[in-house]
Length: 292
Ligand SMILES: C[S@@+](CC[C@H](N)C(=O)[O-])C[C@H]1O[C@@H](n2cnc3c(N)ncnc32)[C@H](O)[C@@H]1O
Image 1 (cartoon, helix red, strand yellow):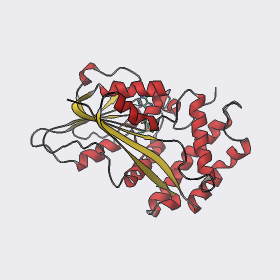
Image 2 (cartoon, rainbow, N blue to C red):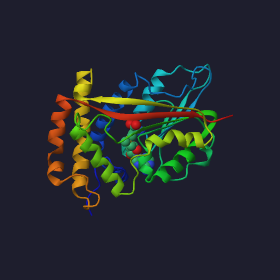
Image 3 (cartoon, helix red, strand yellow):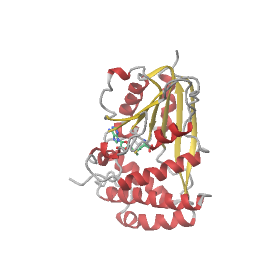
Image 4 (cartoon, rainbow, N blue to C red):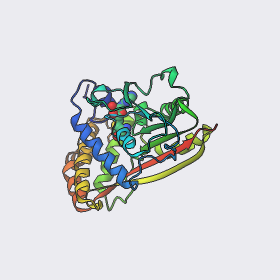
């Protein structure tokens, strides 16, 4: 059997004992890009931190960068402490040095959560993790399971990408091809890559209130006004393109998105496209409150 495609859910399932430092580097660059695209916002849900200690759960936390940054920017409560729990299937991502009030727990999103977590969190954050659940039905079930963990009056916040190039094919032919490879590899393993636009309605239909959505375009290469971050973004996207182009090449003809010669030239031509034209990687952030 072919080895799993880098950064795909199957790869993460098998990354338990692997050196994941290069993936942490890539995820850090993505994190900085999403933050820049959202004008510096990591917390979309308007949870108030200054009046009481809050409990936050970050699902698929990797090395906990989102939690650590949020913790360092929120006001302290009058008494007690805000607490953070980060879950991930791969303990190799967890930082070796601990930070006060941040706990890391090994947990597969597809498994039942500990009963003590029911109605226990003021905020549950799920960023770039739902595809790991599999089909659209399974992703929605995971969202519903995590809504159960939110306290009445608390918030859920989802970040997911559209996996479709937002600019025209004339402008970004090879970025279109990269997303075609990502979609094909996902679909060939029963993962639905096009669920993000539906997630707002999932929260509405679950009975949540104040449901909101915001799009944030991570600027890559020439599109980024911050030249350094733009350049780092090229490297991060080329890691993805390399893995998924190789994965797409091994697919059966019914799933293969492009002829082999286009797959073979993808990484090199994408590097030129991102350097000379740049591109946008589309993220959606969706958040909603659980009624009292
Ligand atoms: C694309 S990264 C996103 C990391 C982080 N949430 C962020 O936004 O930067 C996906 C993370 O989910 C974890 N993961 C993959 N499959 C998982 C599963 N079935 N259950 C829990 N975590 C999983 C991976 O180990 C990885 O840390």
